[in-house]
Length: 165
Image 1 (cartoon, rainbow, N blue to C red):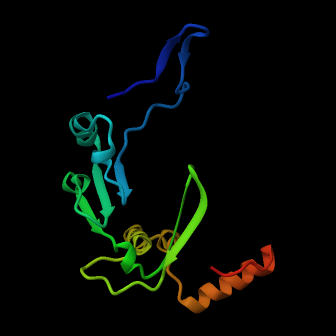
Image 2 (image 1 turned 30 degrees about the vertical axis):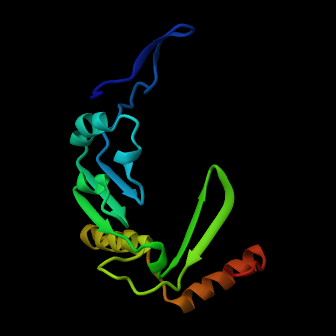
Image 3 (image 1 turned 60 degrees about the horizontal axis):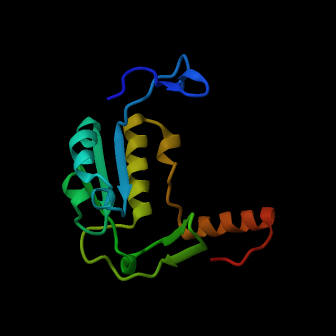
């Protein structure tokens, strides 16, 4: 575990301090993943389990399946599957030039799960209550459909009228 500055002897520039004089590396406190099995995807999974995870204060996995990452997490948050989405889901990636949007009309969830965005909204709401901070509480506030339409109309006036997704 790194406890001091990151100082490296470079061939071209000699001794170089990469963390600066006032910055020290900060330990990872929380790992929160959504819909990814990090243990399955890790190149050196055993080293992650043995050397990284024990130094992290809290590991949260939000997924639709019980994966090996879920088994090694402190908390598992059950998310809706794609066919159960109650809100819109939006995704893109650096290797895919397309924006994909789907959901909003899924079947009722079969078990005690909710959409990914709702999990995050509920966590933000509870954090706001515990911290007594209204800004955090409203961070991922879920608005009624009418208010969302009003926001869409306001953004259309500002940025031009785009087809509603």
